[in-house]
Every structure is written in C-alpha cells, then in structure tokens.
Length: 119
Image 1 (spheres, rainbow, N blue to C red):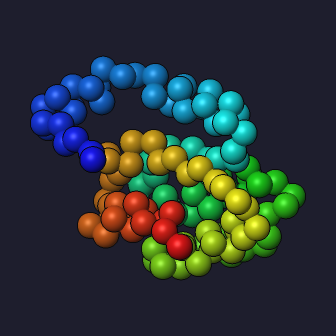
Image 2 (image 1 turned 60 degrees about the vertical axis):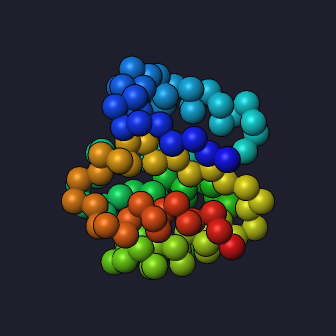
C-alpha cells in the first residue's frame, strides 16, 4: 500500500534531491531496458511536450522505429502514435522530468500520462 507524505515534506524532498536525473540516467543502462527522458520544463505547451516525447522515443529506438507523423494535436493522437512507435517493444521506460512543473498543462495531462502503461 502506498504512503502519502505531507505536502511540506514531499516538497522538501523534491527540492533537496538534486541528482534525480543523474540517478535515472545511470539506472536505465544498468537494467538493460530502453528508455527516454523528456525534460518537461523545456516544453512550453502540451503539444510541444507530446511532440518532443515522440522525438525522444524515436531517437532511442533508432533505425528500428516505424515511421510516424510527429504532430500531436491531442493526447489521444499522442497515444496512438506512441503505441505505433513502441509496437514490438517488450518494455520501454518513459520518464517525464519535472512534469509537475509543466507550463500551460491541460488538467487531463497528468492522469493521461499516468495511464500510458495500461493495456
């Protein structure tokens, strides 16, 4: 069962753990699973974030990546294109760094991203 920490403690931990990205970058090769890290705070809009994510996934997959249209008008279009990209991949780790600080994020963005792993 998950434990929910008080907001003050959670905020303090997030601010004090400065090397999360370094840890994740070191972990991905160690567990031998392909993965991409998307720096969310570099993206201005939700559309920019989704298109950047597809680009990152495509770069990680390299030549084995199927051709997809890089434009995403909505979260549902993103999911369709991401599934097409990851077709045939057993596992893939997608990390959204600082997604909680995403600018101009739609209220449905975080719940939709959290459900990406569901069949």
